[in-house]
Image (cartoon, one colour):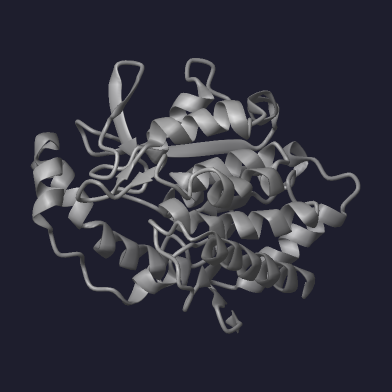
Length: 315
């Protein structure tokens, strides 16, 4: 099955089975996560300002009452923020951050090359202006796994909303700490972390290893499937050199990793042949990770919201 619109595609390995499982859980009045034989995972891609597309899906899903049916939610960078607002049932509130609070020079500054993204300012908005209900996220039965990259090893680490020894907001900041564009590693328990999407923006294999039998993936940049590996720019190499060759290799190998993950999503990998996977991916949407135009941001939100509503209600 490949359900498409002018701006979105849905693809994967038996994706219709994922939507059937979502509605089975939603319509079961006796449903409890701990009593289920299947495991349902939700993966939310980041992408800086492009993540408003993922948040648009989530607003639709909240409107349909789907906040409490997932065993695992995996969030990367701004996708982790979207996952947190989704669990706290604040998605319509959280999405306004994109076009009311961070589409300005307080967050994205073009006075440097490359543009600087002030993650400290973003976290201040989340803590004080558009307050995330941290308590609700911490006490939600769904396991929210926040991806971050450990700088020294270059390996992906997953922080959970149920971790007692990790501050949730600090974990979210680590996942959003873009190398080059913010470039300030976040310290957690003696280790330094940067953006979770450096190695894996779509932790599908992690979801499979956690036992997920059904996986829904909310992508924010389907165009990347058609791109060639990125060319190293001098300013990126200058910023990244301090983290070592291993980190630089992972940074520039992420496109190859992404193509491999697409094989997993489509069931062409031994580990995913028996896993039901549905991925929602945009195309032909005029939006980048640095977009600050409120009208463009709102349009992207409306398109992803409308697509998700139509797609989910088909089942």
